[in-house]
Length: 201
Image (cartoon, rainbow, N blue to C red; front, side):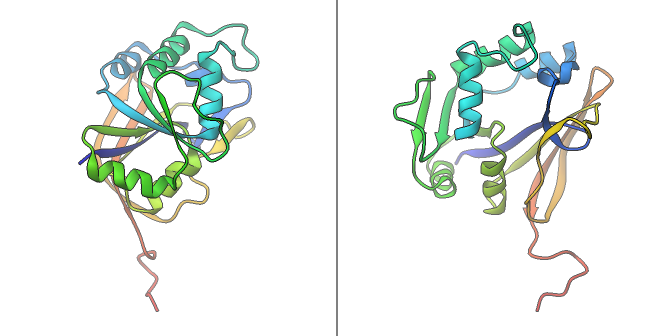
């Protein structure tokens, strides 16, 4: 059976990106980059918006405000291009143009449920906030990992990660600090039917 990891990088205040900020908010360090290079092989799951964004980067489209990719950003995009990827979308044209990418038009929750039951190895999300929310709500996620960068983007933050989530209890599996400033926390998630002080009717 496959294991499903929901994996985010965020600001301290829970944004996935910010206008005018580079990848990793420009704060990645050698320990964090080395850890990224040690990650096990995975099949990456994403929705259409993340596909459009990341495949555009793979084609050389540079984020707004930058003249070129920084080496760390380019290495990250190259690694993702080589990896196996599944994109869930009813709107994208088939077949996908990004290398090593499979398009699935079926319901994402049911498709991932079948992948988990019939496969092996690691399935990992990248970006794709609504997909992650759906998989968590369905109780399919084995591990929920967040790497928090030491910045608050209250004025420029975009893509609030946790909006629309159900209440979720988190049991800590792992935690780590990179480069004296970047914090990783990893949990086993459990969707709650109600808050602890609410008696179900």
